Image (cartoon, rainbow over all chains, first blue to last red; front, top):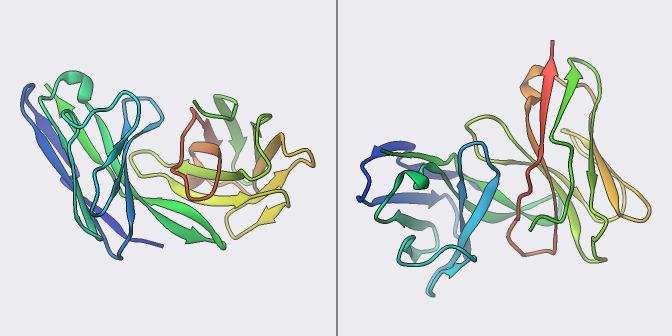
Length: 116
Length: 109
């Protein structure tokens, strides 16, 4: 299984500011996924980030609000721009992996963001 | 949209088997059934997956009906540490996981 770390683990931010979340993986992976989990809700996929190409965003998420970088095969960042209280969520990165002979995904511990 | 239906919540006595149902009546022939769980304040954790045969590993068993329209995750001897939200997900291989609302399992002493 992959070991995934995220920084920061949590933050409290003022509205209108931006926060960049880092995701580091202990092995090289082609794809990385970013998810959001709003309070009391399930996980929602924000985008898929491939190294060397533009990220692919899901419906309802746009690059201007959630720019993503993928400079190499072990690292990615997600920026939450011009934050509002509605952006208060846990943000998780995830990478593909193998379990029991089939593909699956492993998740980082998440970044808990509170916007005041 | 999620392709599965799960009960919102369930309780289970500690030491007893926890049986978590999932309906996936629109599953296609090439889609797998995956189960994940999320313990409070942690990232989701892979439990088990299957295509059409029943599967068992060190964590749980997965029973898939013959028509593949439903499945049951079995935790044979639930402990307090199994309290979590359990997600049943159907997906094609090499596609990102799409989460539904899941089942909140409470294991009671």
